[in-house]
Length: 191
Figure 1: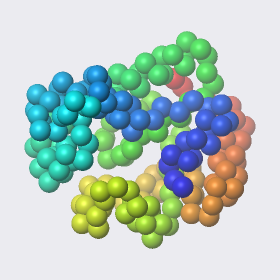
Figure 2: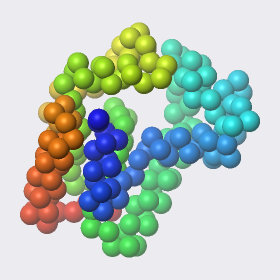
Figure 3: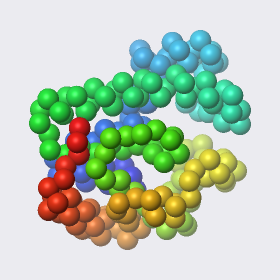
């Protein structure tokens, strides 16, 4: 249980969540907006079903130049989808939304937001969860972690930390306290 489970807890509370990972998945799916662009630069990563993420990962993972090309394709498309999400909720006068943004601090982008909430777990548990993912190896995990800001630094920079290391009930209680604080301050995401 981690970021995705916490996002579902926001959804359960009727707080819309923009899931950047899900958007990328849709962009890479058959007929997705990124498929043709990825095929132009990385033809061996595209099949009849869309972008083969594992094959694409093998191509760009250890090559900063190729990774930069991929990011220049994906980031603008994700930004467009996020802007649509925000515009729809602004029109609908939604009081609060959540932007689930992996690598929030690492991307150096400026996001309009009221609060930053980091979802975190103890290091051993983060490692275990990551290694349980298909295709993940200790070497790949080490390389990924070298590109990311250390968890303790993210925690220090955030407004709130939601711990996911002590079970769903604990996480849900912490999330409830965070939301009560936000509502008491009557500060809502300025979308």
